[in-house]
Amino acid sequence: MLAIASRNAELAGLNFSGQDLRFVDLSGSDLSNTNLRNTNLSGATLRGVNLTGADLSNANLSGADLYNADLTNTNIAGVNFGDANLERVTFEGVQAGGTNFCGAIMPDGNQRICE
Image (cartoon, rainbow, N blue to C red; front, side):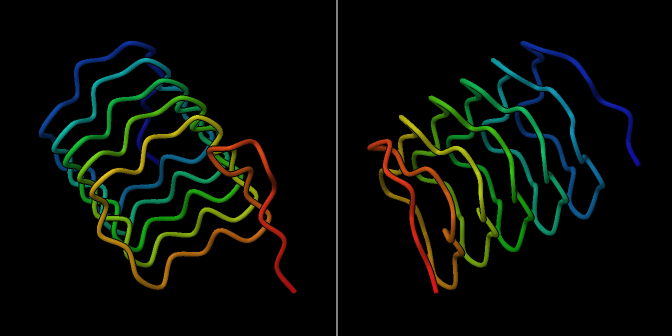
């Protein structure tokens, strides 16, 4: 597991593809244009994070807290957002397909119920 626990970090454009970042706290960090493909971010705290232009395809963000994060123009295809907090998240211009939102708190504050 990669050891990163830094709030307000400047990590724009870095490659974290396939890394294990479970339970990391990167609140307020700049992760714009970052490669997070196939990354395990389950249980991570990503409140207010800038993920504009990032590639999150097939990442695991189950149980993550993304309150007020910016995912504008982000690739979220195949992402697992199960039980994540997505309240006030910006999803403008995202590339999605096969994305799991079951149990997630959606941007409007309502929980997505799945059978």
